[in-house]
Image 1: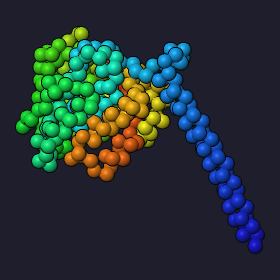
Image 2 (image 1 turned 180 degrees about the vertical axis):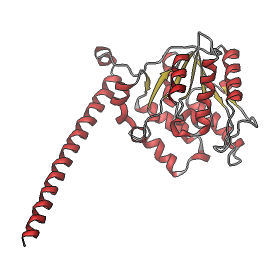
Image 3 (image 1 turned 120 degrees about the vertical axis):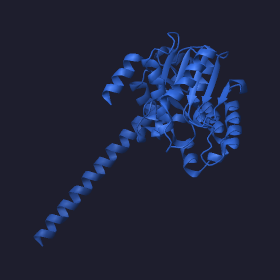
Image 4 (image 1 turned 60 degrees about the vertical axis):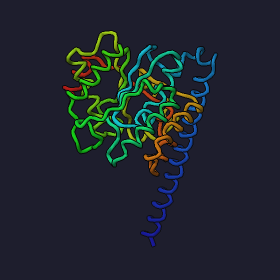
Length: 287
């Protein structure tokens, strides 16, 4: 009987502790959600954003921007908010998309080409500013290693040909750790190290966040504003545009991508980091 009494006391103590903990968690989440809501409202209020010195985007204004991607759908799946913000900041700018493979992993290359062009229409990118490659050395396959030299050559030629002022691509973790994404970063890093990036061309990489933040959608806003130096945050209408652009990639609309476009922060928030030669040297030593 005494042992049962002790067990009962322990059980009730644990239940009480869990109830209190749950209450604290719920209150914290509610406060965090309210902070997010007010921050979002401030960002898109003409006068309040100036008063609180909060901006919905911190991106350089440029006339010619290159978005270097690995596959058709990367442009909207990851870079959509940045593309829309660049167009808003400088309506006459040219945003080029250099897609290094035609997405022919399942023999859907021709289909995915059409989908890419349709997606870019939503993002206000001209057909003339889309370059889709189909190199034997850069095929869409996570099991095939993309050579850094091959990618670097293509990016370098593009920068020189179009006098690119801003290059935007993946960071070393490639958002989803896809080897093709990561390969573009290392090619870009090699260009920085060798001094092949012109002085008038900045390089921004899209930050990879942890899995929890990745699927917080707009709730990642306070964390982004606190931790990031460059960002682009779009309103709900912009988010709908990016989602519609993603839906143009009909061949890729499997169930988990449908969930992705609902919950992913990359549909509404991009945080970016400028990289220089010294940054690249440090990252290489760090790895």
